[in-house]
Length: 407
Ligand SMILES: Cc1ncc(COP(=O)(O)O)c(C=O)c1O
Image 1 (cartoon, protein in one colour):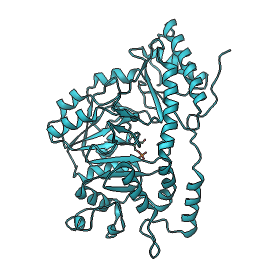
Image 2 (image 1 turned 120 degrees about the horizontal axis):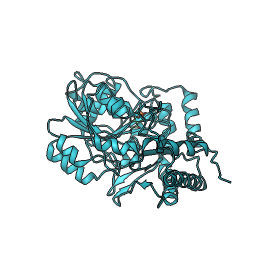
Image 3 (image 1 turned 45 degrees about the vertical axis):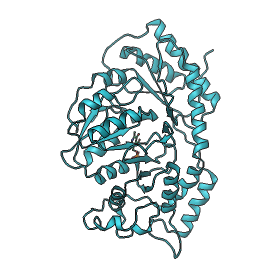
Image 4 (image 1 turned 180 degrees about the horizontal axis):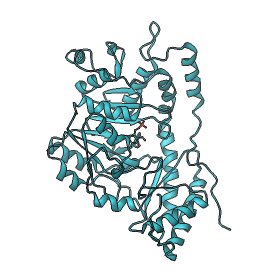
């Protein structure tokens, strides 16, 4: 009899006890606003920034309201504005082109490789005249950062890293978010640390970080920050930088600090799930794994594989069979966006762009969450189910009907 998986793909772990206690302390004293501190008290938000700066090796860090806010704030800090062309990955999630559009700039999408990273040749071809690259490490896949930075430096193109899926990851030992001028992270519930909503920006650039702090809504209280440039860096900016409020509060910062202390252990647990999935699926006929480069230290909170050049009807048949056995998959090839999986042709505020290589990849791209509520045995069972169902559909040639459906 075929086994069914009964776990939930959207259930996170509860927050650690230390986070619950920290939250209660903040709730009991009531000083949730980051600049509302008692005599001699250091705000939780300022402490989190200090600790996250140390974790990434950055000189400066700013905690903000969300990952999407972090991206917009970084773009504004770089003075990206109306009409500017900003390059970004064609394979990413909606908050990335959304952040570009929100400052009035024009998202220009760069093609995707089979490794799910940005296509360097297409990037080189599109670099001229662009104001910045908003590089999305989508689903935690890190491109060759040495090559990318060499290319962007030669083109004079500043790089903002979207590290929403790479907190704790690295390329050749350099933490994700530390290659470009600014690195932006998310602490939204589905990410590596969970504060419901939240974001972090890191940088070594005093001018950019002073602007980001003022933009985030520091008023003239910026000297209360600790992982921040000296007051002199704010002098020429404080009258001319608009307040675009998006601060993080002390409650969220308080629950993030114990999670940050535990992040390396959690990352190892995620990767154990990922490696189990990978081992269970390797060699499945009709399925291609995403190979991970040796220079990449990734942190998996999700798993992707390709069904290369499968007709849409066959992919749908496989998804339905997996769903019937309790395995919830997302497909980036569906014509209509569903849930979180919109794609470049759904973002119609951006000019329509021809991206044949990305379209080919997305047509066969299957995506799955790997929450830490799964055990390694769960991952083994899910891989077994997928192996069976992918093989069955692939070998039977099942469901080749191309009739349009609502997906
Ligand atoms: C790739 C990517 N970048 C940025 C974000 C934005 O993060 P947030 O949800 O914290 O605004 C997300 C959120 O899902 C994301 O997946």
